[in-house]
Length: 260
Image 1 (cartoon, helix red, strand yellow):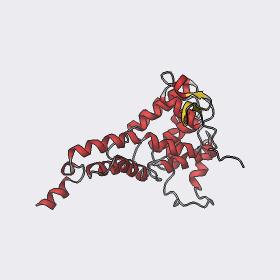
Image 2 (cartoon, one colour):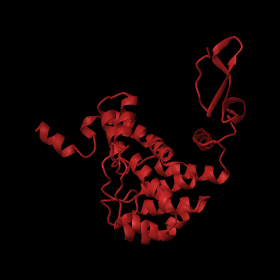
Image 3 (tube, rainbow, N blue to C red):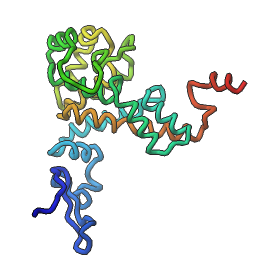
Image 4 (cartoon, helix red, strand yellow):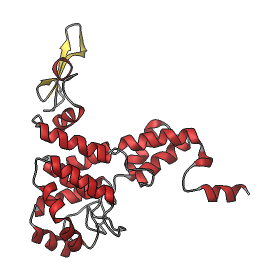
């Protein structure tokens, strides 16, 4: 009879001689995390190594680091951040605030699922403008899914009028450091793509192109998008906890009316 084992290509632990439940050394994809990587590797290098089977190049690490800055805080008007803020002002636990942000930020509007769908589009269309036009013209899919059919082209803002300045700035900055073809092409063809989609580009669309340039799968991009947006949600939740419910944004008029 063989002993049960954890099957993973990501992580290997060597036990301490006096305690089989404590690790003497831990390896991520063969790299000694505490003996070699700690103090030398960047956080984004560790992040890429966890999701991929090879260490990133400097250009890849630079791209993910820049993307992490762009995604770190979607801002208090973002539904996911607002959900965490509501948890914070209501006295919810730290985990509850983050779970609220994850739940609200998981969907098909500026969320992780939208990034997944946009990355699928990148896989199908690449840098072929005509392929993108055909996809926008016939967006239906035969795939059975728990998700409802998207109501807008993934990666574009269904409520937008023009491309927001931060989206254009993020695209330019990320395209400059990207080792892949998609972000530079997107910067060059943005106006044509927006005309074909009938909507302005969203930050989720920029993020999808960046994850694709890094070689991530749509599933990995979805997961990373959820992860990288959590810092802002956490910070705003803690801030609102200190302010109290009477200073919670967007509801001042309603609160004053209720107390009248």
